[in-house]
Length: 310
Image (cartoon, rainbow, N blue to C red; front, side, top):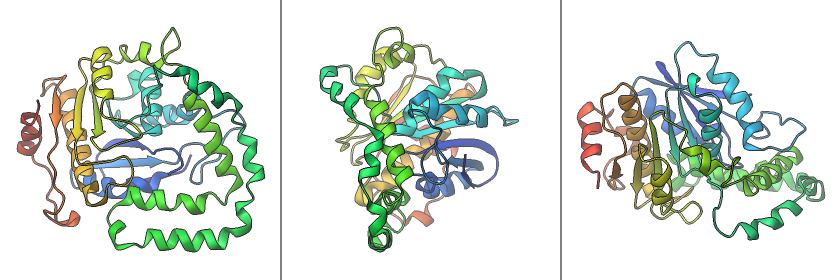
């Protein structure tokens, strides 16, 4: 499993969204490096340059090499997952709770509890359809388009948006297309309730956990906060009202700040220094300072974030 690293110190293992790869965390990794943390971002199986096993890419399959990774550290790492990566992080937390110290989940994919009937069509989704999408024949065009999007001034410091722009080029790889369709199918079919359902097992997670939601997210809405609070009353819930899912314009900085503080707060909670189960409204910082000029967060700023709780 391919990884990229930033910084030194206590480890944070970062898991990317569907179709993206480890470089999506470059900006956040630099932020956490200034906090004295070591971020290890992985290419999940089938994405980036990590090969996929010849089986459906269920959350359990995606989590297996991550579990092996977290168990290899001398110091327990913190899990950080976004969207699909958040679902994988939950799987790791449920399967290997002894190997991690906490989890920060940014707009994690959670199985639908309503309209399950609408997901039945996902069973018809065949990853082998990727063979009938010969995008590799036009890869030079896709590459130029990806480079053009990647170099847009608006994306200069927004590494998640830049990684999302490169998906245009990733599509020219048949194996990546196959992995995308396989993982998307398995996420859609992920059991919600019942003995095998994720919502049933969420209540079993007792480690310090923080969920981060974008108020403008139309893919994973912040309304999930209430549902999560029912089954995980000890989890912190952070809302970034101005942020979306992948591309937030100048508000990407607001999500990055909220995530950075969520990481610091979760680590502080794990050390027994913070109250659990807060709802925090993270303020907008778009247009205030350039990303590289942001100072490292102090203990005072972490405390202030808790005071923003509703």
